Length: 404
Image 1 (tube, rainbow, N blue to C red):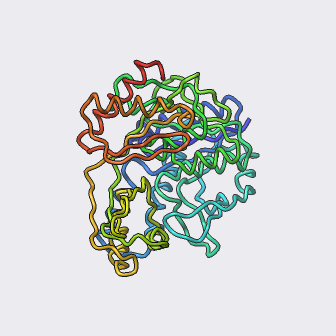
Image 2 (image 1 turned 45 degrees about the horizontal axis):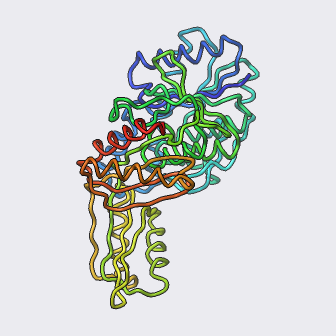
Image 3 (image 1 turned 30 degrees about the vertical axis):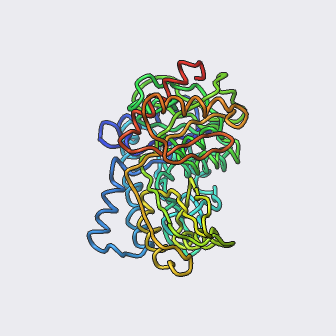
């Protein structure tokens, strides 16, 4: 049986953790399984490399940034390979180019196009453990590309899909998926399993255990992901299709503190306004969420939306550059906010879920600034200072009501 493993950067931060990862990988290989393992850059190395790039040239080309950032994963695969060699197991480390991971041409946020399996298959047939650098690909110009932050998960799932692996095991500093962040909510409960759709929403709304793109890719190809602790020998959480969520109405409460709200005041109420706003944001690859607009009075309205905090400056720049085209009077932005979300597969058919959420916030004296809903989640904006308290109150309410 072939198993794909993935180790996050926090599970490789020290020499002791590298040795631990090597033992886990070798133990699986000794059980008779073929093993492909993708690795992230150690600890905060990617952030350190980004800071280094900015210190040399804040406006460096994305190609050269990718050339630098991709080195973090190459350090990891080489070090873990050395640790595996010390344990006496056969191993080979491969960059994305050596592993045949072809990507789209764009830098910093490329997509995996296909995987040429020839080299990896050859190494597996020779009985070797194969370590593959995550987070990177090679475009048609043979340039190194990076796949976006957190995309080591994408590499792992793409390999699992290409090789029809039994499962993709992700090892991290968490021992599974919880109904809330256990660092914030003390009585958060670990889930034995969760469906793809719920996990996609949780990942998109602030749960940092898995990358959204990785879960979406797993859903597309039917890859089961198991999230496990890299240091504790405990059962993890399986992400799969057709999950009944253990009969729970609510599968999770998430908090995203890395967002900003942008407001455009005094916009003429006319066709095409939204197109103008989203088209200019798209030029800088900025995605907008939680969109709202005021009722038009005298042909004028105000529009607000949220963006990822890392994209706030790019959004403000491109909006100001196109002020006359869009036709707004004033541009405001706010960063001291957080998005609190309740994920539930039955949100669309259970109006009591948002009702209980709003009741819990009211009872705690927490003001709701914006609301957004979908078939599987209800999200609200709250003050950043209220975020943790709001998460605890809402989570406890759903426990008390028997929803989770």
